[in-house]
Length: 327
Ligand code: ADP
Ligand code: TRP
Image (tube, rainbow, N blue to C red):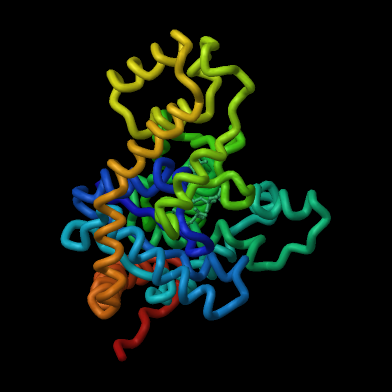
């Protein structure tokens, strides 16, 4: 299978990003083709500070590598290092009907809030379609909120294929992990960087991580009271880290009473350290070796470009553009 996904360098990843997206990329990296990129072009629709964008882009590479993305198996690159993708965006744009983009949530939400949207945000899904189609991607692991964009991608691929009577584009499919489709935040709502309810994968200090976990909102039951694990946000997060047996054991302690939410939070903290401890160490090492990270990104871009050029050449030919002269 040919797998591809992109991650926007607009913030440091939180547990929702990790369990909803990053963990899936890593699990799929032993596929025939696994392409993962840092969507810096997309990030320009929200970040207008060059230093910040550079920082987040570098952080994204470090984070992914520390979390287990193996450059021997997967190809990791920056979106903007493959300029072919912007050319394909234009080809697709000429076939994109406005109504298809008008219903896309990023634009629709902004408009509903009375804010002015720019053309970059409006056409964001077309760039995303180009990202996917240019590598003949078959499977796109993403969180639930991105499924709409994969549907747009399929529509555009079908439209191009049908208008030009070709089979230039492969129709991709979204892959959503049902169990972690919606990771809850410290307030019990969907974890998101837009709300102050997220828990960072790489916290600045362990103390900060502990403090964040201790801030998870729980009800006012006393230590003695029997508690319902199924409605508790701490328990819903424990589920992400613990085995079935461990979950059952903790659920019994919830129901039996005699365990306070503080203990459940401490349990969650320990599980998180057990899970991410190795990544914390690896990231610290990578941070000391920026040249090594840059080499990985450059090698990834060369591989991605080679593939992108072949697909773009097919698309150009299908719509009547001359083959590009070899430079
Ligand atoms: P945010 O909602 O914090 O702005 P992004 O939109 O940047 O996050 O999402 C990046 C990736 O992480 C997407 O694939 C998205 O679906 C996934 N994701 C984000 N938040 C969650 C969550 N709470 N649960 C599951 N997946 C999530
Ligand atoms: N829009 C995606 C997000 O916000 C990032 C992204 C850009 C992407 N291009 C992609 C994801 C192509 C999958 C495939 O998470």
